[in-house]
Structures are given as structure tokens and as C-alpha cells.
Image (cartoon, rainbow, N blue to C red; front, side, top):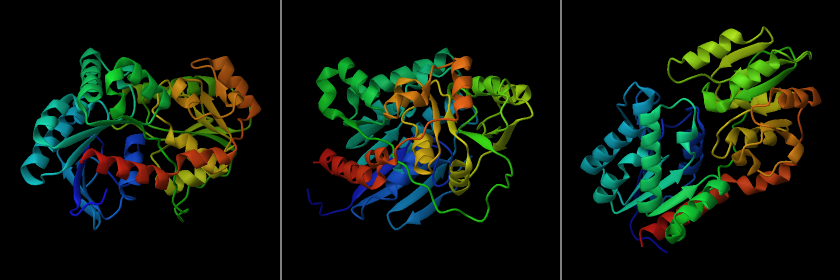
Length: 357
């Protein structure tokens, strides 16, 4: 389809771009910077993470207030973005990332010509959330699957589950993988003079770092464990795992993606002990840097089709300890051709244009 006028697209549900840690944020940063000049994009970010900015002639970030409470942050920031966009931007397509913000999809459907959703993860399975938050996530998922004009899934397994739940809606459902991309190395890289394993991610229960810490406390090898990441909010969970970590476990906090590239390239193996994922970008980035991998055997991780021996039984410390002693498994880089951001963005743009016909 040829468009005479530019498509106006608004994006909400994420913390912001650029350079904000998180799978959804990385997905959005890599995707939206690749779209053609046919599409003008405003990404709604949160003031705790980003400032309003102009990234390119077709991509800008509008930073808005968000509540300083983790369970409220995503849904209410999305609501604020919907209202702001209707009042000041008027767009052809409003795209919500995640099922938390999709709680307000019915309102978006009233206000905008087309509403899209990317389903990144079944957040209601995450251990940290209480009953009310899980209810919000389940409602958001239901609204997305039933009422969105198109729904994109980063997980093939989640796509198949959703098709079975709502078979009449399957024409609206599309697989939209995460990809991988890392910047060139900067001069500001960590000073590390020891062998180390690496784990990357926010310090939240669903990432399984408690299992990794407990396992590494039993590990007798010469390597240390470097954990890159932190919690976005004050967290009893993060405090507890840091307190029980032995001296061979080092928490280095959040690192930018150039620094992460160096860590991936230098580690003995990359470890992903997650209980829940969408499609783990960090694993793709690790493989692109030739790092051996050790991953929990949840279905989303297995969707990557890495060798069977690269997975350990979820939550099983003995299984993880055995894999640490083996040092991880090398993955053929040819698998990465399925996760190319340029191809993903081309397909996304095609589907956006189809949506507004």
C-alpha cells in the first residue's frame, strides 16, 4: 500500500527510550528507530527514566508523569499517555506495549482509529505481584486479545496459546520476535581482571537470581559471578539476595549496552535462570558475542531453539550447579538470522500500514 500522507503513530506502555534497561524498552528502541520516513512516531516515556527529546526527524519522546509505585506505574502512565495523545497529538495508530497498559485499551479504542498491542509476557505469572496487580494484568490481556486491531507476540508459544483461547481472532494475531543489536564498544568499560560468569537483568523474583545466588554460593570453581542490573524501585527482594551472596558474587548495577557487550564478550558463560520471559533479548546478545549460555528450561527460553544441553531444570540448584561446572554451551550464530531487527521492523511497518486500510 502506498501512503500519500505520513502515518502518525503513538507508543505507550514502556519506561522510555533510549538507553533504558528492559526487554520492552530495548524492543521499542531498536524497532522504532528503523521505521521509514512514512511514519511519524511519538513514544511516551516516564519522567523517572527519560526526558522529552527528539531522536530523529520522525521519532520523538514525550516524557510524562508516572506514579512512584511499581504496581501502578505502567497502567496509569498508559492512561495518562492515552489522554495526552488524544488532546494534543491525534494519531492514526496507538500502540500499547504490554498487558498492564492494555487495561485501558477500551478507552483507547474509543479515542483512536486503530489500537495495537504487543504482548511481551504473561506478567500475572510473576511472583512479585499481588492479587490486584495480577487482576489488572489478566484484564489487560483479555482486552488486548479480544479488542485490539492487531496483537503482536514476541513468544511463539504465547501466540499459540492465545490462538487456542480466541480462535475467531487469529487473523489479528502476529508473531513479532525480539531481535539483537549491540553498539560498538566504548572506552568506558568495566575493569575486570578475573574470570567470571555473567547474568543480566532487573533484580526481580521472576528473573530467578535467588536460585543463581544460592547455586553460586555452592560453586567451588575459580570464576566469580557478575550480575549486571538492579531494581527500579526499593526492593526487599534485591536487598535479600545481595545480603546472602558470597564474596565471589559481584553486583555491578546497571550497565549501558556498550558495557554489556564487553561483559558478554569476556564472560566464561552467560546465565539466564528466569522463571518468566517474553523472548530473552539478553540471550541473543550473548550468543552474538560468542558467549556460551546456560538457561532455565521455561518454554519461552526453549522457543529460541538453542541446543537442548544449554538448558537446566527450572529452580533446580543441582542441575544449575552441574551446568556451571561444565561451563555452558556454545550456540551456532546462524540461529541469529531469525532475529534480525531490520527484517522485524520491515514486517512491523507492513502490518501498521495494513491496519489503517
